[in-house]
Amino acid sequence: MTVIKINAITVPADSGDELAHRFAKRAGAVDGAEGFEGFELLKPTDGRDQWLVITRWRDEEAFQGWLSSPGFADGHRSAQERAGGDAPRPVSTHSEVWNYEIAGGSAPAPG
View 1 (spheres, rainbow, N blue to C red):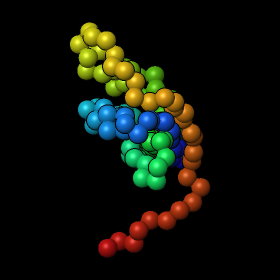
View 2: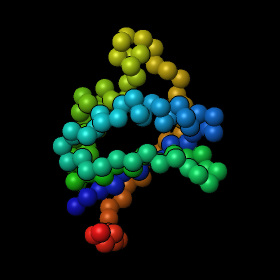
View 3: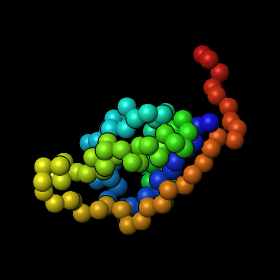
């Protein structure tokens, strides 16, 4: 059963572009992970300061496998850190992970 992981990241208004830039620099880092089904980075458009990172996984075991993988650790390090430098300043002030599974819904009609 597909599980959904939502990382709600609180980002000050002046740091949102930097968060998007950092995600873009590591685009595709999770794509080859066993059981990975998809990813979206959602930017708020209604004045909120929480960005949402939504990932879908085949099951909880696949997600836990990714968390404990070298790819996860490497994907969460900046290019500066991988080159032996210091980590850049964080752009978020808070983060929490929400856990969901699909309970219903619909799909667009073929078209």
